[in-house]
Image (cartoon, rainbow, N blue to C red; front, top):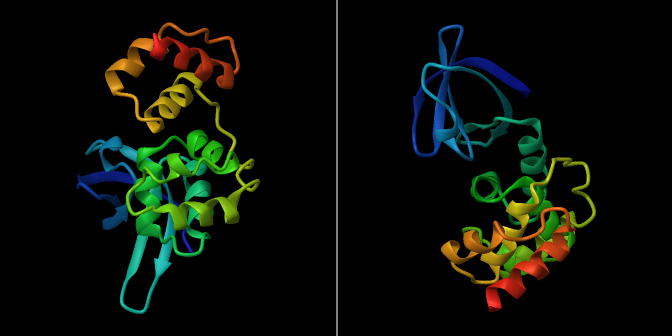
Length: 182
């Protein structure tokens, strides 16, 4: 099992990157390949999946992303190829918060995640994501909450800039909702 690889990015594709290390190019599936720039050197944290017909590498820029990925793929019915878009589309803190608060609506916004799988994620992971410790940007939390409630991106951005950043996330969301209604 690999832990990480350090090397130079030689190719960036829509789903993966190729990193060269000691003359060997490793194809690594990653949540956001465009976060890597060709020609730059990176340390990529790895997960290796070995199947009967293929060996795949999944890579992450941070250890926190890798830890969340490992927890997500432990959920019954959720494999590595389904976990990557979840990490790509959501913030680590937002995903952990949604699972711990049983926010099924938020979880269903991810590709191929229906009601049944979202509930399974909550059942399997609720209370287990405290280990994923990331500084939460409250503006992102408020933005994601309003987006999950169906508000438009343009309207949300106008409101998020006007709320009190010193208040708790819950109170920021309440204030943002009051402003949205006006």
